[in-house]
Length: 400
Image (cartoon, rainbow, N blue to C red; front, side, top):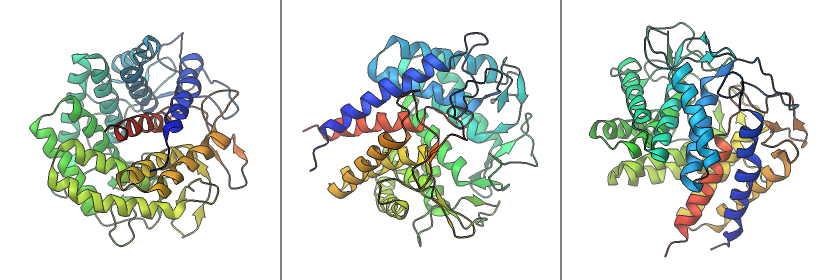
């Protein structure tokens, strides 16, 4: 087996010296609470920018997870700042759920219920409970689980829709972002509800939650995964007809380990055995996007052309997916590919001067400074999760 002893130290250094300090020192909003809503790609904080719930929930998850590992009081303080802001401002106290967007001062700006966002609130709150034992955080996560199952789950098609109005009624524009198709169901929302339920199950191993988690894994395997290509379908109508032909290399590799992680959390032996073959196929399909420089390109578009931009989150998920695959099958070449992608990140995406990572690099190596350094989508989630997974997987793998 390849020597990975230095890999853990490099991941911990990147996490503790580049990623986490950035959010504490540069993004904490000392005037209005919580965290600022945006920093431009040039490193300018926009103090009046709206605040997105996904950003806040991901910060909550990141620093809760960091505190669980390192027991650093500064990380606990950041996690608590995010938890309080989420529950005091993003939580809809009249109808339940969470608002999508707030003003910089904390007033509701976009009140629609995006179930992807609700999933990340569960993810963050359940991790905060695991880190601190705060039972109120767990209760709120449990309430959100019930809201998803009550207002989002469609028992006729056995799937989860995208969005609703503030009052949980049908909404015309269900898109998660402007680039998404306006369809009832998506791979992305299902994948992250699954991720949230996996974490919640570790905090609250109820029979009903396990049943819903197992069902979600089967939805991914039976409806979203394409057994012909190994890729994940992106958008679907209410009868599970596929409404897109493109695919996302980053989501393929991310799904390859999140689905396996969910199956293993359920302790369902039959499900675990089933997912192993499928997730291996997913990972190998994603590897079609690997490049000679060690990076992973973004996607194959609907017209069949390739988007060759190297996005920060795709690289982070590639490192994790390849590492887990390589360790599971004692495959040195796949572990080496994971380390090469990590090297690409360190050499091209990490901002050594300003902290954190840039959004992406273009194929010619030029840094993308057009897109956010921090914002609604640019959060310390994929990159911190990559570091946590490197530490966790290699620590577990080293046990006799």
